[in-house]
Length: 358
Image (cartoon, rainbow, N blue to C red; front, side, top):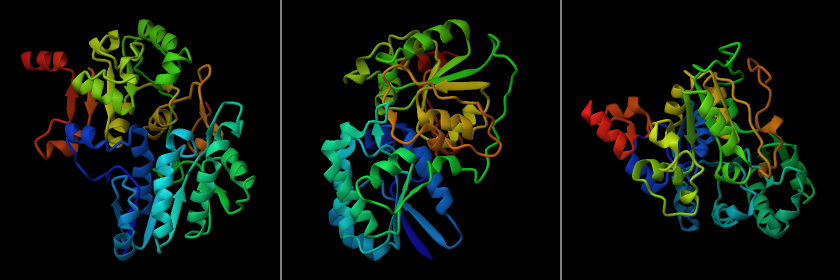
């Protein structure tokens, strides 16, 4: 049996209480990471393979053990070619350089502005070159998210580059069953919305959310960041992002008090909840991919000044057969947690008190 080491925060079969998940940061700061890593885990799982999560660790000192215990190292990535990820990319490169086993990179993307100008990435070009060189010393090609990333690497001299999109889009194989659930969105419609701190604060998305909140009583905001989860579970606002009161995850926001905010730390629970919604929208790529995987229409909104992943949207979320054009909680997989004595649903202190009273 071939043993595959997968770069991921956790295995989809791991049941982790919320406190441990937050302390360990199994979502790697953004729960969207688990969507594509879980998809990669499923794609790689066959009767002849064992897939093991590395917990996001990239320790060069572990290279000897990895060489002895595994047959291949698979690295699904998102917008890794960006300045804020450079240190992590350097650590990953140092590990790969010491490996003697094949290394496979899935879906890496370059992040730049909406005009796809790579000038902001110029300073980290040596880091990207070192990473790609290390990977191609262990692999026949690099899988990227879209044409922009392909062109970005081609211009640096790398030709063994394949546009494959995001692994998350292949969670259900070669088709997605996304259906329009209502001809019009009435005030009773169940609508989900997502958005980054940048989009909410600087891109004007908060105004759209506020308007939707007024018009649709069943609106739910779905956060993705670790700071969002800490706000919901501990009311932790001790970070720059945590102090943005425009975010529905902030304890002062009305949606917080109305129990209309969630953060998921297991993709399957995320999909299960979104399956019952009529519509989803927002600025988060994987927030809307989660909706599509649940069968719910989920267009992406691009607010003003939003930074976009370098891969073009049409290739980050490529057309697929079956896809038409166009209570405040931190939630674990409740079905799994029920087996270990955990409820799987974590509310703010006020909501917990109300639940206890009932």
